[in-house]
Image 1 (tube, rainbow, N blue to C red):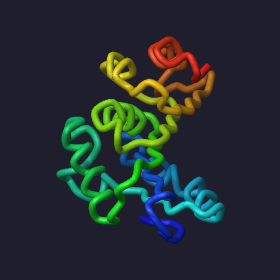
Image 2: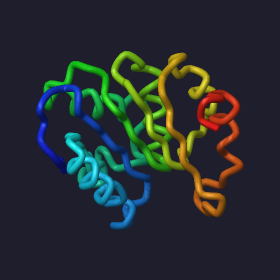
Image 3: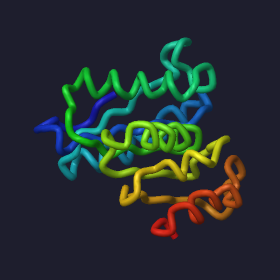
Length: 156
């Protein structure tokens, strides 16, 4: 799904959802996308659950990176983007930003689930990162924030 109008490469946002196929997870970025679009951003929400080959958990970080790169190519985006991710999508966004730092201008993460915290250390120095977490997150406990808060002091 896409929200807003693409005026140029400067206003592109891509958001990756969590791993669950529950409708509230698949659509978790929809309200935020509408608000960002109203503020002038062009927001793309790839529904990775719509195809059995891209369902979260069935592919690795390299495959997710190929999907993100394909979306950037599809929309002819050449400038670095704002990349957002929540839970599983946050882990994938972290991996993408670490491997393709030249394609990411800003990283927005909500309770990212990352099995390999070393990827946090691979993020480019100076990359603006916004990190959000709920104290009572039952899926990705706040204790898992340590690699981010320790590896990226500006996120505190």
